[in-house]
Length: 543
Image (tube, rainbow, N blue to C red; front, side, top):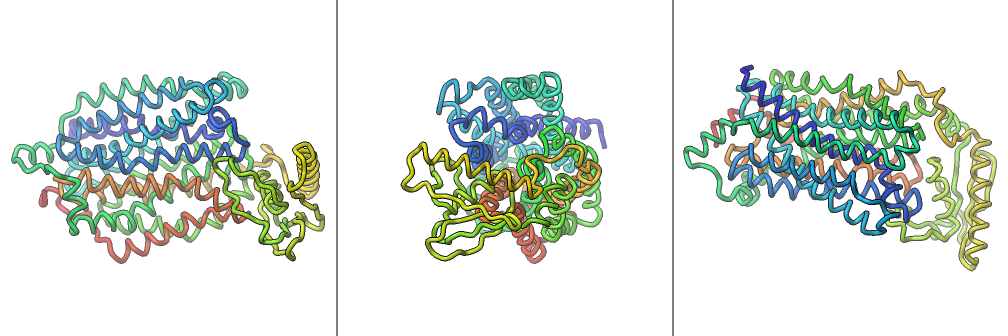
């Protein structure tokens, strides 16, 4: 590796670390964001709405890929991903200064969503630029290893955000952090932006692009070439369905959904959950480079496909083991005292309520909402038509109520009495309100989280090299960016929201895992049948 190649990898990786740090701050602070910007909703709906705002950044990423991918193929890799980091950094900095809902009302969440969308647009152009830039500097036979350094940056960015959050949290205390301290990690990102811009200004354009530009062979219509010609569009579709969709759900399950599952479902305190996730990231992140190097020898496809298959086969038992290790009281209570909702099916409506606009009024919906808020898994048993719903905890039965025909005051009294009775009976049955810190098996939890991160590195480590190798130089930035960001922005970015919606509807805390299991399994089948191996492709042969 020459000095110039080391500089390219370092500069691209460091800049991308900062980009991902900015992006992940929001995800790591989702619970606080919910209280600050969506306080007009109930706690459950506020959290889901905060996740939807988080998802907004992912939804627009493919559009960023089109805009910046086109620029990258027309004017160059270097200047394009210099622009993306400026947009990303400034948007994040402004989030740290944005007044809360209590200060400016509904304008706060509207501005927040707008900033999230700007971040998503910028990230849509960032990854493709960094991956293409490094790959086009890498010698043949080592692209997997070189681009794997870019792959570590997403995890390192998440890790950096967790470390700074934990540091500020410890320094100012929990109360102050929830009030105003959460803003500090966003505000200090302006320093990271300055460093990143300085480093990227020192880079030269990639040799492949310089050569193509000198010969006058750059594409004037990269979007039309990429998606208007079937020979390229076919590869884009296969790259999405057989590669990036599966990679994305494994990535977000292993590094985001696992954190949300610990804090929201298993009720582990934020500090402990973040520390254990940080440990797993320290242990697991280097394996991105290991699998990148291995892909240079045995191929990209077998490693990525194996990661997808393992995820599809093991997620249910792994998350079940995570429950037993992180909140053994909850696992024991579920095994000993099964919870049922006995209700007329006609009374039960769809439980996902992201806007908080719907008010559950039937006895079935009220019972389910109560249990979902307490992170209690339950099964629904059909009762005769017209029957008032009830909750069965072990051998105990608690009648629910309907607010129809009740005054507001009567409804509040009924609700308070119902909640108190259910909470008391859940406690008597062994269901904990929070995970007992003394009973959290930290070693086992870290080992499980490490396994999840290891699957992430299997699917993510070699994927940049494979995407680069699938497309010709003249449309590479555009062609690889779109399937990557549809996969990671839509299939992956919507995973937490979709999974929690599935859980809310079914009542089973593990049912949200069906989303990544099905998609990872589908990508395995499609990838194995239709995707070719790319490790021996000469990326300069077909410009």
